[in-house]
Length: 144
Image (cartoon, rainbow, N blue to C red; front, side):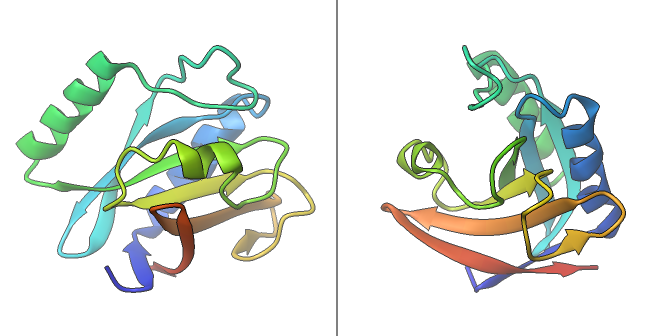
């Protein structure tokens, strides 16, 4: 994977919208696309014991989303979640619990003090990272 990733603008806005639906808990979901462009978001239910500070997707829902992605002729390109009160960068838990090191991890931060790729109207920030073997590389986010 290169150090950049492409996402359609409407998909990016849908991530921010998902984070805003319940801004006190972490939202989460999968991202899919083809030809290197993320074109679909698959929102998931956060079943974590403490959804204000972590996220977890039920295995049954992961299997269903993967089926939908394949049926649509897409490939899984990323996973997203929000940090309601944190910065838009991976936490120690995010780094330690990576389940799909081959995809990008998108973090939506609604914190007013976050920076980079800010949506001035919403104080929302979306950043993307590649997380492999405990190493974090920020990806340049290109909106198409």
